[in-house]
Amino acid sequence: MQEREFQNMFTFYPDFEAATLKIPMSGSTSDGEEPAASSAVRKQIIGFAKFRTRAAAQEARNILTGRKVDAEKNCILKAEMAKKNLHTKRGLASNGAGVASSAGFPASSSVPNGFAIPLTRSVNSNDQNPPCNTLYVGNLPMNTAEEELRGLFTQALGYKRLCFRPKPNAGPICFVEFEDVAYATQAMRELDGHPISSSTNGGIRLSFSKNPLGVRQATPTNTTSLNMMGSLPVLGGSYPLNLAALKAASHTPPPSASSLFGSSLGSRHAPGLDHSLGLEPTSAAIH
DNA sequence: AGCACA
Image (cartoon, chains in turn orange, brown):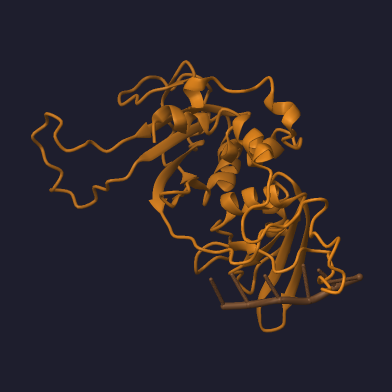
């Protein structure tokens, strides 16, 4: 990941100030010193992001941690509060290794308001059900709080409702309904594996529900008008949609930032095609 | 692993 990409993750966050990446040296850079001495050396990129307030940093951490940053490489984010504040120069990121009177905002307290993000790997394989507008939330510990789940999913774009029911002797089961399959798919991509406070054995597991919330089990007698959601025909196994909507969503702002930060900013518009027109990114950004 | 409600 490039530093600029990293910084772009935050550009839609109101109180974001600066971010920088610490990329481990690629071995042969002049200094004959090989890091074999300290076993603590990790070949892992670490990023720091600074916010105007500590609360903002904590909120961003809560939103970002567990998020998937690279689906292909199965990279998820681990975000935690940094031990020290990031030094900044005029709002731009820098590795102020020295003293630099931490300009920008008076950190009047010594409490850090940035957080660190190590990039780590994880695995994921779910969804054996045909795509639909409802996600099944799995791997919920017994003491899972409904409110925490609701707090998580209400931030996802296209969220409609959540159905949570405790089970007598096991973890609760939970379903989340979205406006349509595209939103459900996007939420699954972004939130699958997301840890919650009660998580012990990994984060939540998301998959398409066997049957969509609120839709009665299909009775095979009436073959004609039985599409599961709205007017969308369900094609066997593949995503029936609507790449247009997803594409629009991922253009402005970038997918990860858009859905979740979008709510923080109060802009929960559906990413319709009307949005994509004026905001098409330059070819340099995408292609 | 883990699928309820109408």
